[in-house]
Image 1 (cartoon, rainbow, N blue to C red):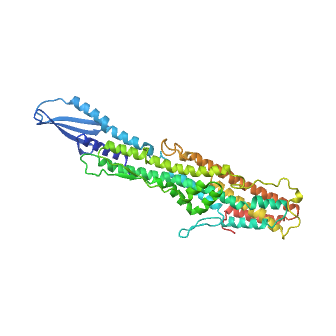
Image 2 (cartoon, rainbow, N blue to C red; image 1 turned 60 degrees about the horizontal axis):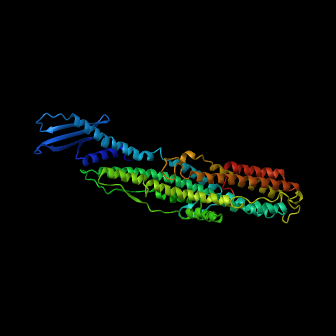
Length: 473
């Protein structure tokens, strides 16, 4: 990557060439000025930089008279220090000050957050989803699919007022609720991956601006044989699309889009199903004068048109729009969309919880599977996904004002959806656990609980939870 010093030295050389000097050595310049009535006397200007300041020597050629050039030498040294040798290092340092590594956000925290969110998506993906036959199968949780299916099948065999309400409130809507929560977490994965892509690509684009900016400076002098037709193509415009592509390895983007649409977040679904594929702008850098090159470099980085900063802002707007659409849908949704419906069993008497005579043979083993195995492992999947989303992100988003969406980008929108997902996953897990306890209590009233069988299935559940055995049916 071209350094600030290299670009500044190229600019100094070009600037001195425009002032009539030619380079005679690294940082050393010379020019001859005709003088005298007949122009037969040459005033020789020698300029060089050393010890952090400009040195000059002015001589007559031929030296036919004793002329003291001390005042002129001092004035020339001061002028060139101000307008060339001191100006260009400061100008180039200032140009890239906000774009240095360590000043811009680092992609790594976002890549880590995206990886954790993708793992959370996989944790609550019921089954294995094939995204693309050529890409193989994405990770998922076949055991969760089996648990949900078994839970639904067995609870529908129970009779009694509580049993019916338990099925209607918890079991029947649960797969759709988990799928919408999965889609919500998927949007966090896409957003984090896209934000990481923004800063990885921005770093690459800055490096390319530096490389081509050096070439443009080298070609901007009058004595240069270099090309002035230099331009840079920004890659940051593809960051959101790349974030969606990264997410495609953990689940069907079409399924996520459909789930978001069903929950009233179609805008986010559209962005995931068909992310904007903006054409990369080509920005001119070269010019026949170093000051014009500097202006082009400044416009490419921070200008009001298709600059790098404006391109980052456009990508972050899409990220914020995606996050806000899902947050807004979750806030405005009725219960039962992103969480379980409101339970309505508080007024059911103890004798009405479960019928003492069931329409099919219900054994303590079936009750134990429901209350001690399937419900605890499903709740654990939700809690595992929730743990993976706990990411303290405030510092990762910070950047200089004027780059992208302000000093923190779409951080507020990300944190709002993150907090919503944490709340919904935690609440759903807790409500499921409470419902399982209540069902067990109801079964115990009519003698359908066998403590030994219950402990056996509880141990099995604990092993699945501790080892996170998602591929055990």
